[in-house]
Image 1 (tube, rainbow, N blue to C red):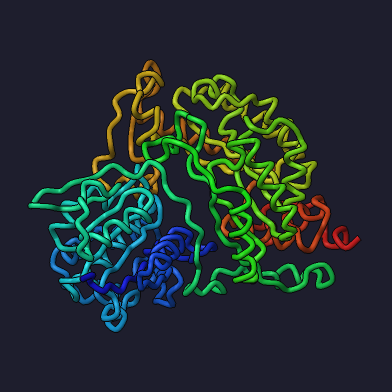
Image 2: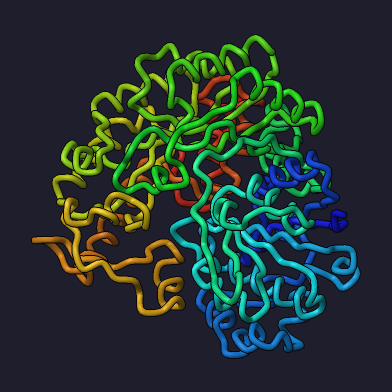
Length: 553
């Protein structure tokens, strides 16, 4: 006889001072999958809890927060489950009454977010200290920065985590839950499962071909994710800018990436191939989400939408045929854009923002990373996207191994030349990632002496959880010099991006604002002017050439 189970899946809080602007896709997919399999399950994003200020809990600065969370008292609480201060924090996220109604707690950790991992441990410790015989199953960390997964033996021994699933969780969770219910399933055959058996810890390889599951946001308060700052624009010009809330929903219909960039972890063992939902099926799900939640704005979360020219054309054709009148954003590869036609079709199908993975405009670095984008061709594509009416961005990485002044200047020239057609440049520092070709075949890429930071607090304080490794360049810079060079490269690009007004001062609101402006104004030039005014209001840094009178004309 199957054991009855009441499940609750939670998204672990991030402790970063503000809530996410998107409803959580991962837990809504797992919720949808298990509910459709007949399980009694509820879901909650703990970032949306009305709890005491994060500043009150962890201090006002990042380093103060880290000092608190790495204190001896915190470690002692994980060991003993007894500390009034940490119990008081955890009880804000999981009350005793709620715990009574849960048999198995599923904890989804924010991808690559160290603080979310620590929060997951805190909440799980509290849950288990009050309910020793109940189960905690965790997952969600990235394959390359999986703090709890790597420390599973320790946290399992302490009685905090019973199981951990690395990689996509739907099918693996279903198999594990069936085993818990009494079915004779060999745990060694459950993909990504980390477990203890006969006193020994086992870690199975993640699933290779993940199922793509439509999300179900039932039980989540979607209003809490709505952007409702249209009053800022309304006060500027009521005629042009009516008050309106904007809710953006996440959506995913593609898994994996066909490109094999040396610095990217997408081609890792969990994404060995690219799979996708049939475009007609994807549009059917979007139609359902639009009807259920009165939603028309979506952020598609893919490595690249145009992994196949046939797919992107078919998908856009289905959207146009369905006449959904939705607006969406996604990322594209310049390698698979063969002309302006596909960009014009995307706009007709509702696309309003696109990002192109450029990383560098140096032909040397393009070959070195295996990205193989022609910078001149990329500049033409950016112009086509702009002319199609799309809000257009590129991504740039500062400080690749063996990057030279000439490489930096190539990207500087690209940004200057494309500035009339570019709207935003997303900038990040280079960091060496696990499960990348640069890490696994370091010598080929001129990298040596790879070593981790000495301790986790130093890693997070110095690099905010991004750069796990130090390294030296073969025949080039040692790490103490390379780290400074990465910073100089970053600052060079950042100054340029700021000068050309290609920087977003509120990235978490950017998409909501753009969707709002595209609804209010049809002409992209006017949208750009309004966005610049908003940016200036945020930071008071840009001297603008247009004012509201220009917009009202």
